[in-house]
Image 1 (cartoon, rainbow, N blue to C red):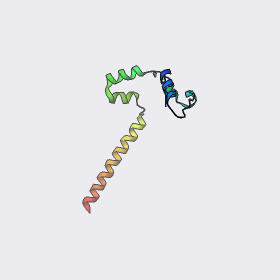
Image 2: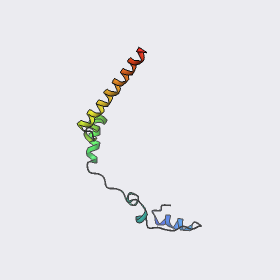
Image 3: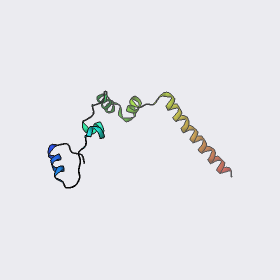
Image 4: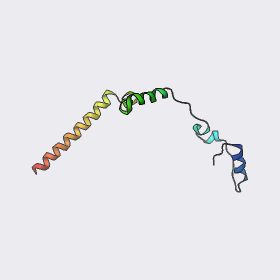
Length: 93
């Protein structure tokens, strides 16, 4: 059980049974001990979201390169071609 205050610690000690305290810094993740720092660029990110919308945000902040976008487009065209070829084959048989 995780306890953050002295009164919580006292209430936990009052419970019957074997309860032992451990040093949280040894066993826990750092964000559970204290808040994480606000990332740089967070304000700019939300400003871009308000200004550009979701699609613009993805173009600006996403990790899509020209090559990645072309690869995705080629896959889409390839799937469409395969689908059309299969349709034509089914019509002939």
